[in-house]
Amino acid sequence: MRNHNAVRHNASLQIGSLMHAFILFLVAVAIGLFALTQGTKVAQYDADIANVNSEIAELEARRDALAVENAKITAAAANDSANAVAAAMTDVNTNAEFVKD
Image (cartoon, rainbow, N blue to C red):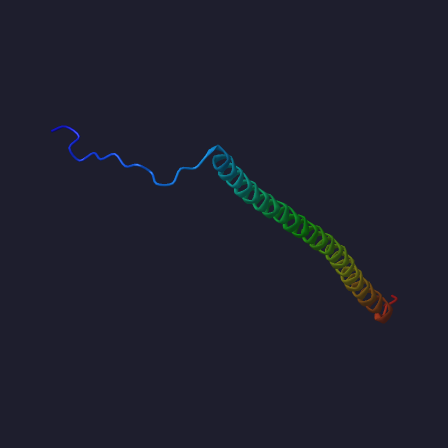
């Protein structure tokens, strides 16, 4: 009673060697198209990365320019405050009355 459920079926449709070659060709074309679409996605990611890198470079340049401007403003403010102290010191000296013995 071995292989009691096994039944041999005869295929009603026979395909020849040309049909096998055509089916393999279609599979190869499908795989090629899939690979091509994946490759263009990678190229798009490269373009996106290049855009982000250029934006980062522009923002870093802007940050550096703002740091220089901040240093100039800070130096000018310190200079103005030093001038105000110096002016106050000269005002004190000019208003002072010297007593002669």
